[in-house]
Amino acid sequence: MSGRTVDLSDVEVVDNHVHGFRIDDVLAQDPEDFETRLNLLGTLFSDSTLTSEAGRADPSLWQQVRRMTETTVFSLAARRLLAERLGCEATAEAVANARAEAIRADPVAYIHGLCEDARVAGLLVDDGFPLPRVPSEEFRQTVGGTPVHRVARIETMIVDVRDGAEDLASLEERFEAELERAAGDPTTVAFKSIIAYRTGLDVAQVDRAEAAPAYLRWRADRWKETREHAKPVRDYLLHRAADAARRHDRVMHVHTGDGDPDIVLSRARPHDLVPFLKEHLAQPIVLIHSGFPWIDVAGYIASSLPHVYLDLSVMIPWASLGIEQMLTVLLGTAPAGKLLYSSDEASEPEVIWIAARLGRRALERALADAVERDFVTAPQAEGLGRAILSENSRRLHGIEG
Ligand SMILES: [Zn+2]
Image 1: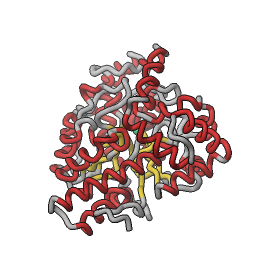
Image 2: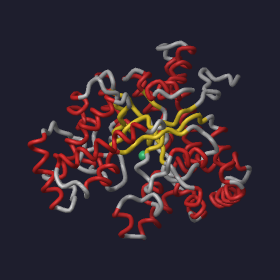
Image 3: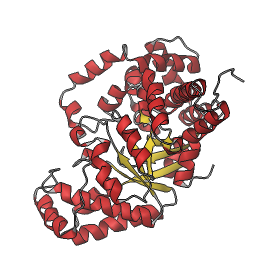
Image 4: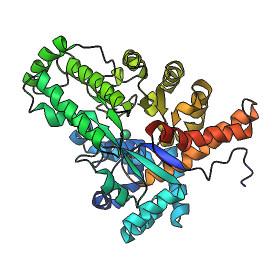
C-alpha cells in the first residue's frame, strides 16, 4: 500500500487515442532531438510528425522549438522519469544516449517493457496519421503484443475515393463501401473525423441537392478546402459516416480543439459541433482532446448530451502541472463514466509511458482532493479512477479485458 488516499498504481490503462509508428522510422530519428520530440511543440513541429506546411517552409523554427525544451515543465518532468527508468543521470544528453542504446538493443522488447511498466493494456490507434497507415497487426507486433484497436479515419477514405468519383452519387457509393470495409475489419472499434482540420466543426445539415453541385465545384477547384465548395460535401459525408457508425454499432471519434498549425482553430471549438451532436443524439461520439483548451465547454456538452464522451489526450500529458486542475474541472462537471484516459502519442513510443505516469498521478491527486473535500468516499474515488483509466473505453468500444 502506498499510503495515498487514492492508489491507482495497479490499475490497467487503455489509451484511447494514439498514432501508430514503425520501428525503422523511430530508429531513424536524430537521437539528439529525442527530448524535444516528446513535448507538444516538438510533436507538432518535428520533420517526422509534421503535417503542417508552416514548419516545412522555415527550418529555423525547429531551432526555436529545441531552445524552448529546457524551460518546458513537461520536458523536465519527462527527463527525470526517463532517467530513473533508464538508470542514468537526469541530463538531456545522458537520457538521449541511454535511451538510444536501450531501444537499439531490442526495440520491441524495449517498447513492450514501457507498456508493461505503465500497465498499458490496450491502444486505440488513429490510422489517419502517419500514412501509409500502420495496420493493426503490424503495430501489435511493434508494441510487443499489447492489444491494438483500429480507429478508421474517414478523411483518408475520402482522399482515396474522390478522384475516381465523377459525381456525388458515385462518391457516396465509394465512400460507403470504404466505411463498410473498415467496419468489416474486426479490429475497428470506431470511425474518426478530423473535419476541424479541413472545413471546421460547424457541420451543417446538408441535403443531396446542395451537396451534389458543391461536389462538382470542389472537384473543379482541385480539392481546395473552401467553405463554398468543400464544406457542403464534407458535412454531408460526416453525417453519412455517423449513420454508418450507428448501423455497425461503432463509436465515432471527432477531433476537437487544439492541433498543429493547419487546424482551423476559429472553427475547432467544441461549441461548433453542437448542432451535429444534436442531430445524432443516440450515437456515441467521443470529443477527442476534450476540445482542449476549451475543456470546460466540452465538459458542459458531455454533461448535457447523453452519448457524448470526452477523450483526455493532449491535456494528458502535455498540460503537465495543470492536468490535475483540468481533471478536477471535468470530474466536477461531467459523469466520470464519460471520461476516457489517453495520451495522443504521435512522435515517440515513450509518450505512451510518460502520459500513463503523469496522468495516473494527476488523477490520483484530483480524486484524493474529491475525497478530502467530502464529495466522495475513497472506495468511490478509486472506482471512478478505474473507470477513467480503462473500464469506460473498454465498455464503450466493446473491448474485452
Ligand atoms: Zn492524435
